[in-house]
Amino acid sequence: MADPSTPASPSRAALLLVPAALLLAGAAGAWLTARPHLAALLGGLHVVALGAFHLRRIRLRTERLERALREATEVREARAADLERLQAILDSMVDGVIFVDAEDRVAMVNAAGRALRNLTGGPGRPLKECHPRSSHGMLDRVMGYLRSGDDAGPAHSILKEREGRWETTYAPVMSVEGAYLGTVMVIRDIAERRTLERRLLDAERLSGLGQMSAQIAHELRNPLNAISGAAQYLRRRLAGDPEVAEYAGLIGEEVQRVNRFVAALLHVARPAEPVFAPVSVNRLLREAAQKVALARGLPEGAVSLDLTADLPVLDVDAAMIEEALANLLHNALEAGGPEAPELRSRYEASGGEGTIVVEVSDRGGGIPPDQLDEVLRPFVTTKPTGTGLGLVVVTRAVEQHRARFKLAPREGGGTVAAIRFPVRRTAAPPAQEVA
Image (cartoon, rainbow, N blue to C red):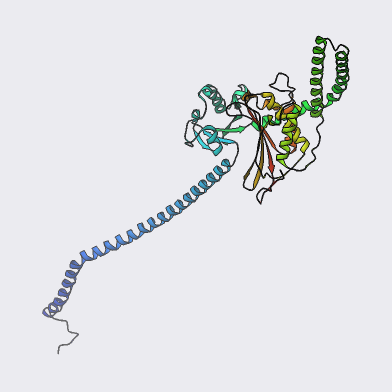
């Protein structure tokens, strides 16, 4: 055996290097063979890592977008709820409300505004479409004033327009920075206000009337009594003179007419408080018709009766209501016409509430439509010899009974005067009245 410390010969060293070379060559070959796969593997890992990075970014962005979408949806739903609530509030208003945007188009309107301005199509229509053509010139000036914030024009042309019973008020809407956003139109029914104003004026007139009524009665009645007595004395003293009899009769008639006016004046100036008691309505109507016919020297059938049976009994002041009916029947008889005046009664019920309706109608010449409300005022009359106080007595009596009174044209000619007496809650059918 050779000594290990002895250096190997060249041939042996070469033999030892051959396996090493073969091993290195094999490793190199394997590397060369595996390198593309490793590169592909590394590339795949890089792509996976890059994809995971982008996927994470996409996921984060998606979450942000979803969050932003939810917030935007919540805001949109909240705004929609606010708009729905605002629309419900506006629709509950009696006044018409219309908001016009900066382009003069209707942006929001409530139910009353749609009905009053015929906005069946809702928002989006031009402002001029809901105004009469005759008012477009004035409307342009008004909108110009509102848009510029200039109130230098005449007040009636800037803020208000009157259309019979309706009053429209215009007001500009400005942003916090002062920019013009649009105009709010508010349409009010001023019929009730006019009625209150008229009642206030009438109350003032009647107040002054009350202060002078006593003096008028004192100053007129004594001379009238003297004149009437003198006329009767002349008629008796000169009974054979037909001319004296004619003029004495004329004097007596005129004195009676003035006395009736003084009596009506005192009655209006000093109204009595009603004393309520249960009353059979139909019996009250029959008695009023009978007394009026008797007072005018007419037969009982001078007033046609159409009375509904089984009416509820009412708590009223019989004398006061009878006097009001007498005034209406006298008016109907004086109106004339081819038919006798009619006195009707009926019962109406709705939702547990009842109403007894009493109507006096005639076939006379009627009252002009524009004077149906005016004739209810003191000293306003359409009759040549009327005092203008009869309907005042009727209106006051009706108001003291918490009833309603209305005059209306009658179909075919004439006038209908209707009194509507409220009947409090009727849980059972109307009680049968004693005829």
